[in-house]
Image (cartoon, rainbow, N blue to C red; front, side, top):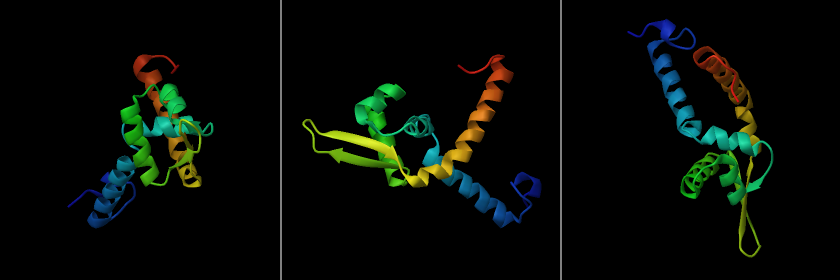
Length: 123
């Protein structure tokens, strides 16, 4: 039997397990070192692949993988421009706005955590 206080809200054992599965789903989509960073950068507007790589300080191989996953999950859209050489731009989708509250809460928590552990504000 699962203790009910281990769930986010009072729930049955099955509801707790479903809640944990939902958290896993969320982490699969936005977890990792780069996804939320890329989303935060793209909140400033569309960028081409090279600009995004420089801004994030990420290798092209990893950037490509992360952007594909964000695109599959409907958070980023990709536009190929008919330029020579071809330019690919990325921008957030309207669906990505659903992450705004979570990103803000995570930022606030991270700022407090940094102050508590390191003893100074984040840069």
